[in-house]
Length: 117
Image (cartoon, rainbow, N blue to C red; front, side):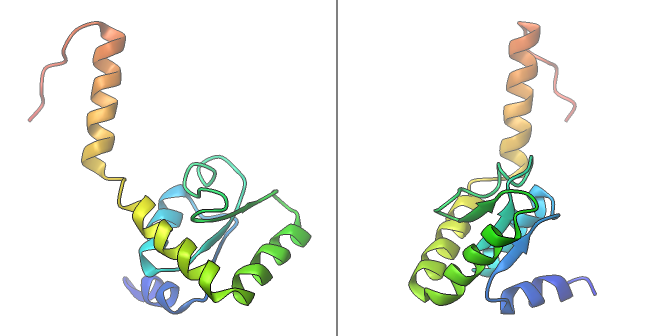
């Protein structure tokens, strides 16, 4: 079931990410689904509240329900958030992360680090 999750996400009206990792939230966004996620580390950095989806207080089922109803009731809002989520997710890459990490290490060391490649 390698692609089963992605196919399911592509058909979903929205994605609820209460225990997903940050990578999962970003990975699901290309399926054009707005995200309702728990406001917790990792997810907080993956969802831009009010733009790519909603962050809800962890364990607040009323807020969770309100945000889900909002997205299911407003197709234009859900579509706009989904499209912004795709744009936001496209700004992330392993190469960019590696470059930023290497730059931080070099800054902390005060010198260039020899390349492994």
